[in-house]
Image 1 (tube, rainbow, N blue to C red):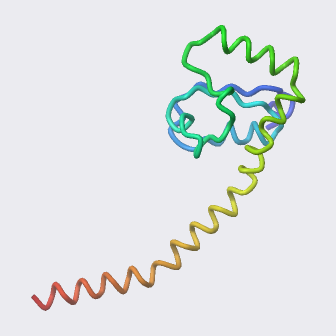
Image 2: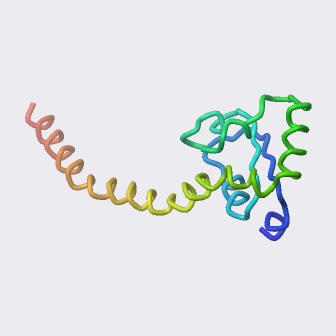
Length: 123
């Protein structure tokens, strides 16, 4: 975290197997986040950063241009991530809601299973 707090740009060109923790932490530490378009990063619902910051693989010239722009216009480009930071800050509440909804469904699902068992035992 200390390194992220001192950084301006965080780059993650990994496989993005799911909603990655590091890009979110970097954004919360004030970094501009640059990713590739692999795995979950290709989906805006999983990594909702502006498409300008999602690079095509091995596009070195575009990556270099974007890095220069991000460093020279950091304050301006950092604001492009305000909505991402807001989205991240709501994730805990969203997760609690999903868990509650799942827990609330358990009695109904249990009742369905019991009925199915009784029906199968009768035949």
